[in-house]
Length: 226
Image 1 (cartoon, rainbow, N blue to C red):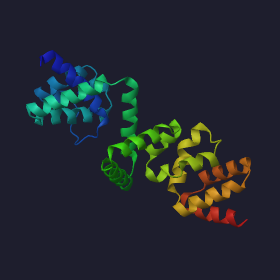
Image 2 (image 1 turned 90 degrees about the horizontal axis):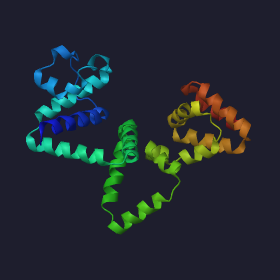
Image 3 (image 1 turned 135 degrees about the horizontal axis):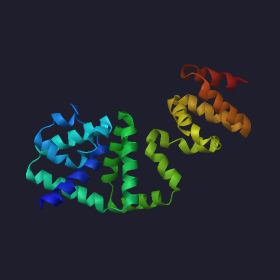
Image 4 (image 1 turned 120 degrees about the horizontal axis):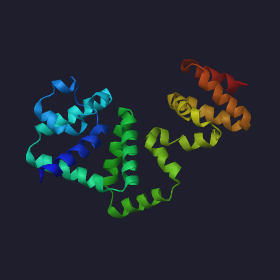
């Protein structure tokens, strides 16, 4: 592979790999880096001091990882990055979103997803195709719900119906509040919300948001008793 093409490929690969977690941290001062690292990270030399510290650390980790690879591993890595660059922008964005959602899942949820993937891979090809087709018919918002993990994905549609008027700037806080509730308490909240008109339901949501987490179950029990 021509050296110019290889340098361009490496620059793209290292940039893409910024989404990957750093495997170690080290001094990010350009003048302290060795000559091999200078060569690998040359595209960033002029802007090095202004790159965010976390991104510099990841670039350094990727450069160090590259130096530990043999020729076969390097070629395979570059081919994977070329395949990635060949994807349409929308597909790359979709995969980045999926990866970010995966990293945000707690370990137990990741374990559940891995187990589900193993079970899915063991199904007959025709059944896999049928399940994919069934998923494709779902509303895009419902599809996106499953990126929150199997636990949240199981009740998020119900929550969306219960709390249909959440302001955009309160979406994340409301989701975190619902996720933090024990399953039984969340079920009580949904049961209570069904009985309330829209304005009272919204007041309840806001009240729960400003209530300390340790006191929310007591608040729900109080409201259920009224």
